[in-house]
Each structure stands twice: as structure tokens, then as C-alpha cells.
Image (cartoon, rainbow, N blue to C red):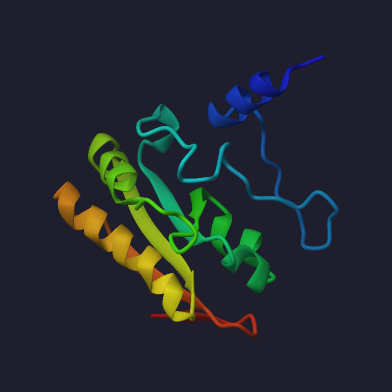
Length: 149
């Protein structure tokens, strides 16, 4: 039997084939790596190389029904809630941006003002990194709509 750590390593190294699922499949998921929490992801990883990143506030995955299909697909996904965290994600994200060649970043946050903290931290970390990484910002409304900022 394969251990959990072996499964995580296989997923992160592209050795687990991700078959496209159609919406409604019980095991529909677009997770590309593990872990997902910003506090737990490594600062440098070979599977980050030239990948599109999705940095999402925790609530967005619950508020937007097609989160996996429309946002996570083909993205390294990092999640967190800056409001509930006493320390800033700024140092960790800055190191991730500096240490890796990232293709693009999409920030997904809720429309609530408290979610603006996540957006601001990502923008500050990107600026501090000195890199010019293409960036998109998407807003999820409390009634589940996805908007471009």
C-alpha cells in the first residue's frame, strides 16, 4: 500500500495523472499539488517552475461553486486567510516569488473589505520581489458571482 507521503510526492512531481473530470463527478478535483495552505507550502519547489499560481482567500472556494473548474485547473493553488492570521503572509510570499520562476499570478478574494488584506499582501510581496509577473485579480461576491477587478 502506498503511503500518504508517497502520494503527495507523486502528485507534486507530476507522477499522478490528472484526468479531466466533468462537473458532477464525485471525485472532481483540480488539485495540482499538496499542501495548499500558504503556511505549509515550501518556499522553493521544482513543481513551481513556470507555473500559473492561484492565490486565494479561504472563503472563495466555498462561495464560488465552480472554483475547481474555473480557477484551480492548471494552477498551483495557495490558500489562506490574512484576517485570521496574526502574522503576515508577506515574508513567505516574497520568498516564493523571489526563489521561483512563476509564469503568472491570479489573486481570488471575496468582495468583503477584510479580504482586501490578502490582495494587498500579495501585491506588496510581488513588488518587494522585484519581479514583473503577470497578475490578475478576481473578486467573488457573497452571492457567488465571479468578477474581474
